[in-house]
Length: 536
Image 1 (spheres, rainbow, N blue to C red):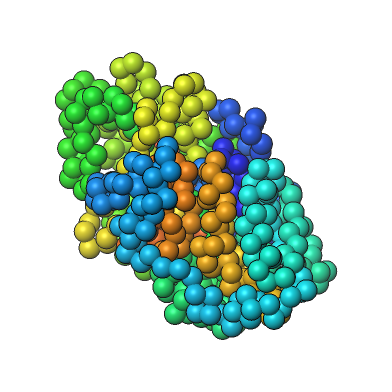
Image 2 (image 1 turned 60 degrees about the horizontal axis):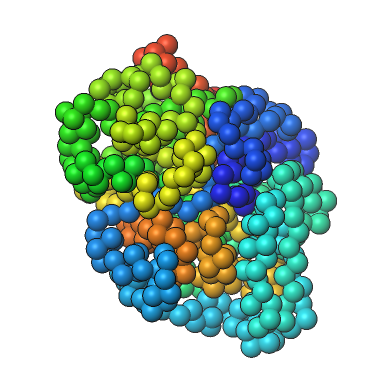
C-alpha cells in the first residue's frame, strides 16, 4: 500500500488469510491524517500474537516526504541542477546534465524494450480494455497525484486504468478479495512481506516472464530487483513485483545554517564522521540527537540504525540471511553492527541528554535541540518524513537553509555505498495483455514523473533514467541523487521480518538494551526469540 501524505507513519497489522490461518507478518498499511502528526505518536503495542485486528504501530518505513542523503561528489557534479532548479526555470535546461551526473544514463524510455504488451498498447492495439488496480492511498492529495500518473498512458493507449481505493484497511480488503476470487488485476503493496504472502500461495504472476529482464537491469539498481524476488508456492524465486516509487532512509540531518557557520564539513567517510563527532564534543556540544520513544512502538528508530550499520559492515548476502531468519540476531555479524551503535548510543559525550534519555525522548521531538540558538546538538539519523516534525516543532524553518542532510557514510569500503529504502511494489494477479501493459508501464520513469513534477513530496523515483530537474525541491533532488549513486540497495529490514520479530521482539530488545535493563547478549537473545513464534 502506498505511503500517505508527507507526515504519515505506518502501522503494522496481521492479515487473516483464507482457511482461518493468521500469518504473523510485518505488513505496512498507511494510517493517520495530516493533522494527526504531533509527537509523541500514540499507537497500539506491537503485535506478537496472531490477531487479525491487532492495532498497528508507527514505523519509519513508509515515511513519504522526499529528503535524504547526499554526497559531496553529487553536490559538485550536479551543481547546476541542484542550485538552479529549486527556484528558477533554469532547471529545465540543465536536466540532462543533472541526470547524467547522477546516474550516467540519461535516456528516453523505449517502450518496445520494456515488453511486447506495452509496445502494443502504445500502438493502440489494446484500446477499449480496462485494467483494475487496488491501492491503499487515502490522503486526497496523493490520490490525485497517483491518478495523474496514468492520464498520459490512458490517453495514448485507450486503456482505462480503474483505480480502486482499499482505504485504511486495504490489506484486509485485498485478503478478502483474494479469498473470494475477485482480486483486482494489479495490487499495490507497502512492502515485500505482504506481497510475499500471496506469492507463496501461487496467486502472483512471475514478472520475469512478462517484463524484459534486460530492461529491468537497465532501469533499476539490482537491489530493487533482488528485494522484489520472492519464493512462490514451490519455493522457487520469482520476480513478484516492481517498484514505482520509493523513499530513502540513510540520511543524517543537521542544522545547515549553524553547521556552516561553525565551519563543520559534511563527512563522506566513517573516519570523517568520527572526526566530526569528536570535534563537536571538543567544541563543547553533543553530536547526536537520539530518541526511540514512540508509544507502543518504542524502539523502532533503533532498528533503522541497525539496518544501515549492517549494510555498512557486512555483505548483502548476510543482510538477506538476517532479515529472513537464517542468520540469528545472536550471530557475531549482527553483534558487531550493534556494537557500532553502542559506541555512539552509550557515550554520554555523543548523546544529547545522555544515554538515559534515549528511550524517553520521542522520535519526533529528538531533533529539536538542533534548532536552538545556538544548537545544543547537531546530528539526527532519520527518514525523510522527519522534516515535518522539524517545522512543526520550530515554526519558520526552511529546508535547504535551516536544515539539510547528508548520506550516512560507508564504514567498510568493500561494501560500497549502500542505501536503505522503503517503498511501494505492484504485483500482477490477473494475467491479461492489458494488465501486462500496465505492470510494464509501472517500471518506467514516465509512470511516476507526473507525481514528481507535481511536487509536495510523496514519491522518489527508483528509475535510473529519472530526470532530476523534475523534482521541485533541492532536498528531493538530492534524495534522488543518492539513490541513483548507490552501489546497492536493500529494503528496511524490520519490515521484511515477520511482525513477531520486526515489530515485536526486536523493538523490545532495543528498548531493553538502551534503557539499561539488559546487556547486549541478553538484548540480542530477546530479539531472536521472536522467531520462535514463526519458525516451528
